[in-house]
Image (cartoon, rainbow, N blue to C red; front, side):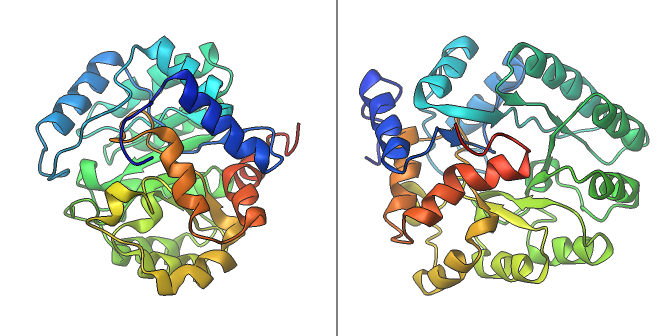
Length: 303
């Protein structure tokens, strides 16, 4: 199921539930979903519609629903915990997004309290405020933000988050289009200074899959999320090298389910089927789709 057929309908929800029920799971933990202020999300969808330069291709957003319906869909799918990946693209935006995300998490108990940051003079102060307020995961979008993760303004932030053990889901790979500071080299320098940082490489590090697998092998706290990787859509322009599947299997405890819901051009269940057809076994799927995320965020590991 690679297209939009059945997306969001009762039949798809049944397919998703069937997937995790067959594995004996209580549901899914999805570490990479997007909820954000409506006017910001509208701008994001406009960018996808226009095939902007950081997208570079037709990208029809399937789950273009009102917020309440999107939350309801994830619950129907059996997603027990998800995130509100917000991210700024300019100075003065992150603190406001963090305030919105904190309110969203308070109103949505199954959403992990998410926060973000940008290299600017007050970044350490508002990141500390978010941590004190209970943020459980941060989003860093190096591609869209067009900033160097090694910017000196961010050094105390990375140190704070490493010390707190709070995961940072980071779009740092060069797919679907490269950014000014994407790629493994800047992240390698960052991890050399902050080896305890719980960095979650979004999209499996697309398109530098091998380089980011190597970083994960060298740094025990580095994880990768599956967002959009292995799907028919992504395999057309950035195929995962099948010779690397044994390494993916060996890193099974540090691979996390992510989907990019709602901003995906295919049905949610297709991401799950794409993982299944890798042929890495049910134990690997159980860990990726629930166990690893539950353990990372201190959630109940079983129903």
